[in-house]
Image (cartoon, rainbow, N blue to C red; front, side):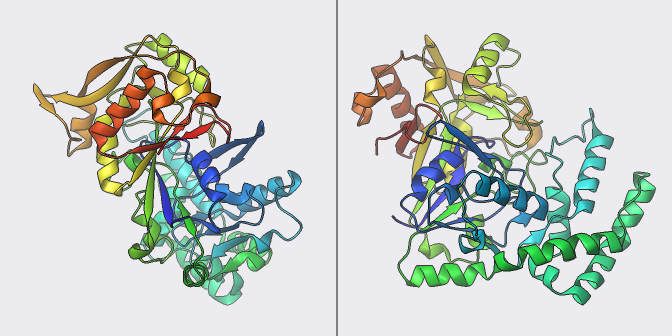
Length: 434
């Protein structure tokens, strides 16, 4: 298998976990390069549902090595919850450190980060300042990373340095939590105790992920880079400020692991046959108000609730303007189109091919989030498709004509071939047509 990156092409929840799970069977190593446990990848294998938030989806394949790169922020509590869950499910043996490695330079999510995240969302609740975060401490942890006061995983193994760094970290945070939010921050001693406790337990898992990846590259092994969230939630290229706190696009795989760009062969963009979004922010094709019954039906059929938070996802028609933008920003070489089964049975389906803004028709995303919020979708209407026997499908030519036309229109507009089509939640319910 070529070295590949898997990225979300929308606002997250596109089904990346399932695609990574499928591709992992052909890869030697799977590495997560950004985000934290605000991501949730739902996998269904032989009818059994597994949700992972931090450990790469490839962990379900026996013998595969799963790495967490320096671009990820790690909550030790969540990490061990996942390890224990996977062990109980029989996925991991008694020595999970043989299959999972965490970068020495990955930043740690501390209890104070979760506290600060929660206080901010509560203060902004219902107002324009509300972002709709998962309140997992992701943003505050990345803030400390950029401000050069973050705690690395390797710091947990050096007690004297750790206490000193925690002291510097809390000088400012204590003031903010007390004076601005009127709450009580954790003490340095409490944070030190937390870090020391988890540091010892994490010790066998911590290593130099960059070196391990370079050694794998020299040995001719294949590497799969797994991202979280979606391209339209990228801190630089998404609908800012309604975005996540990291770079979610394909280039982040390099900075988030220390690997050179020249080693990448393929970039998979994952997109639903429709679009969903959790939280606030622009969503031109949203149908919650224009067709609430259809939105309700698609949400129920597609089980559109956040894997991490359980929040209901907003529902909309496929936005090809946004998808083309995501394809260009990520350099996608192929697209996996998921959940076409959710649209099955509709007499007509719509796709957005341009926006109307201030009386003008535009075919690219607006430069400002305010303009994106005011943009109105311009749709093409296509025939829907009926149920079909997936066991008889081997190529796109085997699809019902309406579905084949739908896929062809996506390829034509975006300029990227569709190589996988998802027709259900299970690993086996994916048709490779490329």
